[in-house]
Image 1 (cartoon, helix red, strand yellow):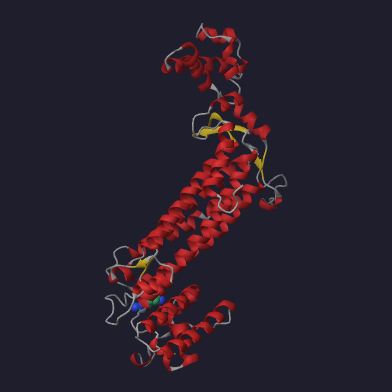
Image 2 (tube, helix red, strand yellow):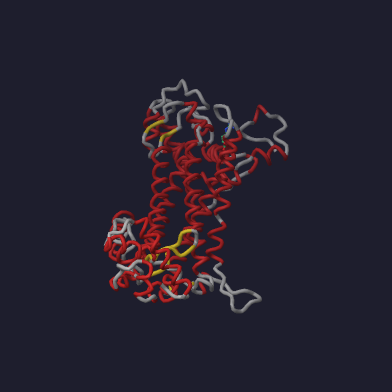
Length: 464
Ligand code: ARG
């Protein structure tokens, strides 16, 4: 097949293999909307600068308008033989309006064109992910509010450490996803400069107005160096790096859901909407959605590592290797969109069992720190010594196979004679959690305040 655009230079046309390896249309057609938008801005600028005539500009805009509609309705027919989205649209424009179409590519190269389209696409992807992250945070905050008082064990080393509130635990994820949004927002600020007008790499001799096209396309300013403009893919890497960190956070939440929903923990249940039965074992309720949420992170890390590897060691400026940049970005977006919807659904679906959680929080001497703190506060014992005394009391409880609160006062006084019955007041899990009122601590009163603060910080769409 002879490529219409290469026409004269390649008499025989690409072989089937060449077409196969060279063509990007199967995936870069996702840039079609951005490509038309970029071309329209470029055309407007060419007319404004007197580089092409008003009549040609008008014909081009009219043709691009029709193409835009066909793309929106799915009627546009992309051809592999035309290699990529840019050449497909340009060829179609030529079919529609004839000769003036050939003037659109004045003072432009596919190198600055693709960089511009792709930046606009990543920018839109970031905006969508930000909205999805806000929804996930909203679901977490709602659950946290409902469970500001629900006591559960807090873990270090996955060993019960101290009693915490479930609301506090969930708000930890609200912070993590807030930072993810911040990372995307930072990347968005840096990516929002316009490569268009860099030409193939060196700029152009035509009197173009790069500020005008940058502004029309919603960029803050044109990129300062034409060679950087066509070579840079940092913006995609930053987006993928933020995506990978987000995926890590999602996998941690998912893993906790898997643990919590196991029969051994029994902290939460999912409804049938988010769990499946086993084909063989009738008692099973598998948290498939959470497991897949955990597992999907692998793909996203792959997307980041893939593009880092493509870019590593590439000489300036454009090399065709860079055509490999798009699939990673698209795939990460598709995966994350699904994962964020699943995470939001899972959080809303979670049915906590406060009795199981509380029971579990009382096991494992989780109020030992409260005991030690009491010795420090009331008896003025140095913390290191209090830690030692507490260790003896825990050992005693262990040997009697009972909780700290079930020991007698005499038991406790055998370790430290000055202990009084007042110590029992700090040994319940409720008292322990309620006492953690330091800023950022787990006390229910804190959680209630943090719920309000988190809504104010993160939830634009639903201010109370
Ligand atoms: N399809 C190409 C890409 O995605 C467009 C840029 C092609 N530029 C070139 N000089 N061949 O990278």
